[in-house]
Length: 377
Figure 1 (tube, rainbow, N blue to C red):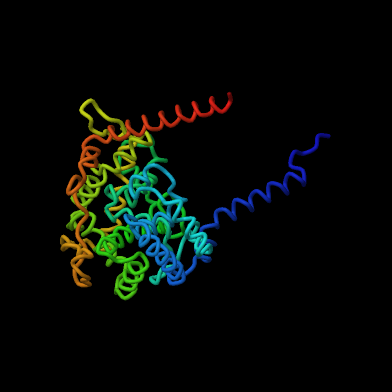
Figure 2 (cartoon, rainbow, N blue to C red; figure 1 turned 135 degrees about the vertical axis):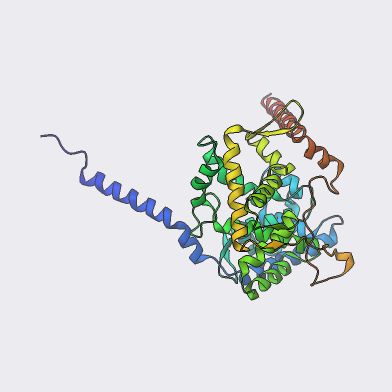
């Protein structure tokens, strides 16, 4: 008589595996339950900012906000694209922090924090989106909602050429409050709030003050989701009639697809190519999923605002103009506006920078190989 393959040992192993999957699936829930309150995190951020201010005072040319954001986000976003945005981190400053307040290292691995409004937000994602809005080299869309739209759409590549069908397929993974999917609610809040917070940084506030002031206003609003969405639509799209569903969807798509940072990101990940005229062309099998992701963004904002019209923003006060709590932030400059000559070139021909990055990478490999051969002699 043959022995069943489902022996007690195998059944026990299968049960353990099932339990493991269940625990992994429940992980986001446990993470949210353990998320520290924003006010506790702010105390640590203020200590970090004090060190950044002291360091910048002794190192002319250093920017305290840049030092703070890079310290927070440098480990998670350790890639060439992040270096383009904020110039990369400072190892010397990180050593300085380790020597003077080693406990701050916990901030670099922080996940969600609980906001005064009750939601959980990915804190480092929030800090990165806010820092990228400061104008240190490139538009911020790719470091906020644009990058997450690509992340949401990429797994659906090649599934359908119909944006409406992709919309239905992707909807469950967009802004899910349970933390599931490729674009969970904690990321959505980080994107929207990050853009709004970035304007406060532009106006001269420190990161901790900006966080405290912004979320205090949201907590006091009758509808926090509408308040954040209204400011975001004004800043990111220059205002819009969110009740015009097709028009607003088209505005979000055009803002996304024409952004130089998004185009560079798509090129770097082989989600797009450059045609004979130097224009970025999105891969045909990814076009519909990306359009669907942008449709989800537009509809989420329109729903939060109940389809009302959002006016363009007023000018953002700069530090030299003095503080002004009443003036709303300015809109994100259109691609090319007030941009350095190099970035203007990248916006027109993203393939140029991609090629240059490839050449630099090849040169690095060649030098490393030469050094290795010399060491072998």
